[in-house]
Length: 125
Image (cartoon, rainbow, N blue to C red; front, side, top):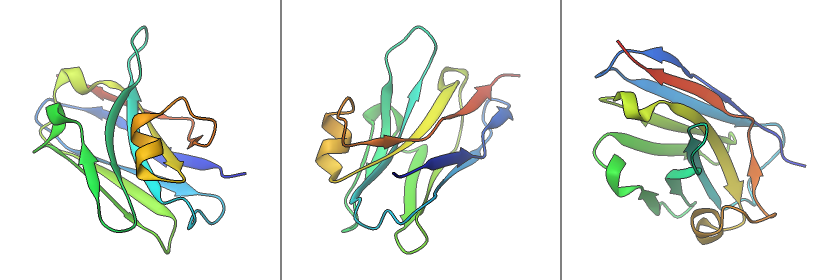
């Protein structure tokens, strides 16, 4: 079973930047879909960004221009670069992998997806 671990979260001032990393314990080469979601306590989980091996990438409309997703399929890692952070970006951020980009982006309740435990990102002065 795939185990994912996020890192890089923390406290940052508004306007600052953070880079989150996600590492897999075993090969996830077969997991074509990779991405990030976030959740604020009491609210529904929100899709952030995702990408596929062929380079196809999707980012939530509200985050375009500030967030970038990337990854290395040979090293089983992925990253979320977050710039110009705002207080409303405060959340627990989760990395997720799945068999396809579509499954990951459109069916996040699917049992075919594997999730990390999450890392807290707090944006405040």
